[in-house]
Image 1: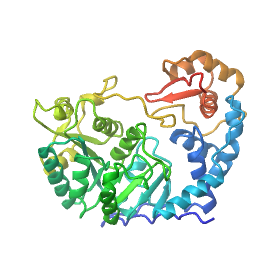
Image 2: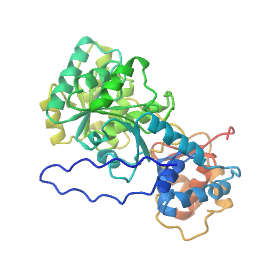
Image 3: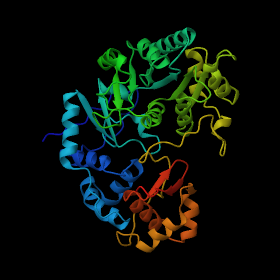
Image 4: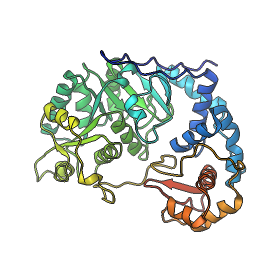
Length: 408
């Protein structure tokens, strides 16, 4: 069946040399890459490793069952071709475009982050994803002042040439999208691009798709769940040069977006609020700890021109909101990246069992397990890959790993 072709790259800015474009992928390889990305226990890090190791997705798919078998799962089945074809058909029916990492048209800012999502679905004129962008996020139960601030800031930044990125949520997100409708806005979805959430924003989403873009890494048709929102927030910050918080409480999802911005080397900014308003608690503390204080668009451009070193970004500093529930296949850190492994395709049952004996429910640093095993980095990495594909371990944020537990 035909596979949707990649989108055309956005035009180069005047006075710059256009970047060399990657060679187009064949339809069969695009389908294979979607299958690889949708296979059980294949997250962004595993996906990248498998492509590097086997050269293309078709060979990687063939190798998955033997790798999982080496990790202890003998009945591993990669994503069936029919399932991937059905997702592509659903995308075409919804007017969405599939964009694969490494293709022309993949958002350049997002491509710079650690472990960018292998697959994106986009509805709308996707060339907007190549433009400079600023994210604006904040409280769902925003005050009238907070909503006005979001609208004014979004409108001014849009008129100055910035695309506004947000998460289509109630409150600040919706206000930011509305004000940037004429200049360009990107709504990052927590589920499939064909599953609008919240439902009352269906008309808003339809309007965004006329001049902006709805985008998601989730499969078509997937309903959003709580575990999807932190992953969505990582894309919001990844698509933008910086993130502005407006009315974010001490423990809020908006602060997850700010943390991701810091990890991705992006600017993190905040608008101050009344000290007695709990909706402003996170913003005020964020500013106290070194975030740029934002009053208007000029403050945003000043902050973007001179990145700041935040206390929050210092090693070992616990962030205001530290949530480790990113889902089974959302790798913020993991095994060593290796380009070659000259040994057998299987790392060895003895090494795998040694790793499992050293693990428990409490997360442990990968480096510590590797030292105790005494294996080479290549052997250890392959063993971790096999165990992860088999669902016997969990790779966690911060370079940690743990036993997957008896249910696996």
